[in-house]
Length: 182
Image (cartoon, rainbow, N blue to C red):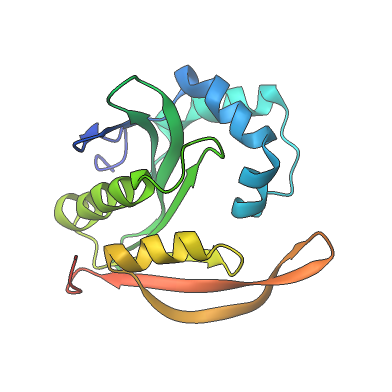
């Protein structure tokens, strides 16, 4: 579907969201090695650098999803990624996820800005009716960002993640095209 391959460049006052690809290997690889980034995304798998290279090289040909690198407009730093995935054309819905690198200067609103841009693209350009996501209960900072953008808590998946010997719930959140976008 042309909405996804390749995804368009999206710009905000402080960010450039560009198609994620092989040119973003170093920062992507660093994120995959960072323990806090892995915890927040629930990533158990140990990827090889070659697997990361192959994944990034194949994204441009992947249909039904759009992956963007989050790049600071001020200095070109790649600080994370934001993704629309699991497109369901029949039900006009799509999944959302975002991952900021652990050194991405949290608390400066970059996640909120990137989320707003991609949510706007999903509703206004792709035309989906619903965007859904899951966020782990140990990540209240991300939950606040999602709520600030307009997502609502829809439920909870109990014991969805087993991390360091503990069971962690996933909070299910969603947003409809008809919901307010603060």
